[in-house]
Length: 464
Ligand SMILES: Cc1cc2nc3c(=O)[nH]c(=O)nc-3n(C[C@H](O)[C@H](O)[C@H](O)COP(=O)(O)OP(=O)(O)OC[C@H]3O[C@@H](n4cnc5c(N)ncnc54)[C@H](O)[C@@H]3O)c2cc1C
Ligand code: FES
Ligand code: FES
Image (cartoon, rainbow, N blue to C red):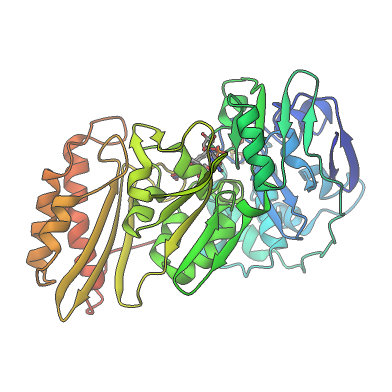
């Protein structure tokens, strides 16, 4: 079945290109739309940014270098060429770039314009904070960001509300050599997994996509989770929140803001908007990287992984899900269906801290997540988890033991920080040394204490 999508307002029914072709290559080589640029080919520079409108209507910026052509099925795509024609007035975002001297070269500018087009279409108010967040995934090495931010702040237009077309879904795209399956139900997904044990299970592709964009690999067979309704669910009950494994970071953020604002803040520092619009918490968890950002939070929050295979469903506590370096407890015929996060009690002290060299668009050296119940000044319970300190994200038992049953005072925090040396022997690598990792992990206990302090001790200073 062909994949159907709109490209700058024109319906495309594509049935010929290989399923492993990236959208960036497709736009440039098959469609001749060379305004979309390749800078890094790994999601870091934003030069390849395009805007996609989802069937629900929202417009989002994504990195076309990390997307495969079949992922466009059902979407309406706008590239920089779709904003204005050579003989028509510039789009207000383009006009603002010209008026504010926000562009020098043609490499970064189309990506910035598309990121800001999607931002403007979202209807969000332009503040220093929201504009910086919207362009954190776009690099400029010459003009500098001030005129670009000025341009963004000066755009004054009402977002156009296009109704996206309802396009027939393609459940199996093939060029004869490779297959891209896009099931819509969990039953179909599990069946496909069983039939094709060597296929890649593919969510947003922000980890897997690199194989096509950077390494120029063909996947052979892909099973996409993006259209499986059970994996797209966000459900809140009395005691917990359930997030389907294919829910993107962007779609998870509203509920995380509600139940665990510190977790939501950490998620806002994962990659860029372009990455968060594609990437999923499910993919982060299944990737099982020791420096993935969400696993320590899920462990500290006592989340449960709901996995599904031919024998049905089973549940695995988050702390037992990561069994070795980049290895999960999933059996080869199982997929992650969802994750369930118990609602933190209103008086729970939950904080997640990401330590990286840059604030935006950086991979963590260390992530620390802390869930403490303090009653009458005493620590009643503590769940502490770290990423970047061992081969897997893991609980810090010695640190927890130094907290539980103790008064929640500065000295306890210091002692718990010191106890972490009994939990981990971190590695030295190009992100951080063993000493640094140990010291920063230990110091996070001080920060946690000050964050819980009613005297508004300043623990984070931002300059926009
Ligand atoms: C520029 C850039 C910046 C990034 N920044 C960060 C960052 O700051 N912090 C961070 O933690 N990560 C970061 N990442 C990594 C990546 O974005 C995340 O790990 C993301 O959550 C992966 O989700 P995905 O949906 O894209 O996964 P995919 O790439 O689709 O899949 C990842 C893995 O999970 C498996 N998988 C996915 N879904 C399922 C399922 N339902 N069942 C079984 N297996 C499944 C896949 O087979 C694959 O092995 C970054 C990546 C890029 C390119
Ligand atoms: S080419 Fe750099 S983010 Fe895609
Ligand atoms: S104007 Fe292109 S890198 Fe900045």
